[in-house]
Image (cartoon, rainbow, N blue to C red; front, side, top):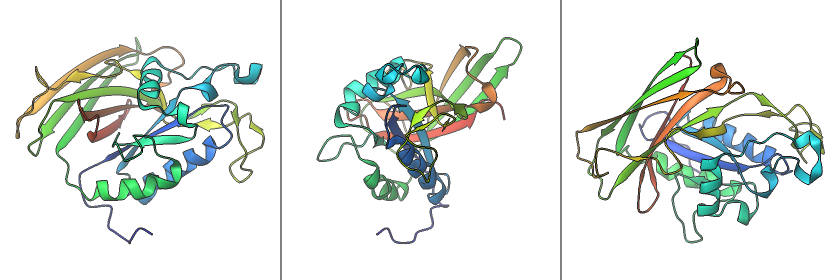
Length: 257
């Protein structure tokens, strides 16, 4: 039981990484849950759908319906580091906080993990500015990280692209969500398309050591492949502690406002 709180005040946002795959029958339920939590928590949750591991393989079970490949280099790296798919999907990471049993959390514990994090004040604020040149499908995104509180350790920034409204077959065992056992017109949202600065990102400043009141600026340029639909894409930026991997702040902004 989570007591009634006002989630609409506060400046900390929480990252939910939903580790998923088109061959996973329980994954649509986890996607619905993540979406419901975003609403429940007053849009202070940012979701990345990471397709990785056994259930995300193209031509899953040699079925051409599942020809799509939504895996990414960054997603595969994170999956092997945090151990998500080896624990069985669906599961996820909440701000990459490490608990007594490691980083990986099953969906039924997501809400109770997000709740106290939203009660914290933001140690940093992230501002994203996007400029998309439709003539050559090139995004320039500028990220400002404004340090609000003392933060010991070294901090890195990761900048990703996610895409909504990708219609593609998905295994499903919940008739309330869609057709079973395969929903051929399933809508995949928050799909990780890739990272603009590698799986582990870049240091803030020169060394990753940050000073209260300072603003750190990073900018990236990326040309979108044809299957990335700009109007359905978001830039997701998050800052984390290099040693613990804990995310201190996350922000997202549509590529085309």
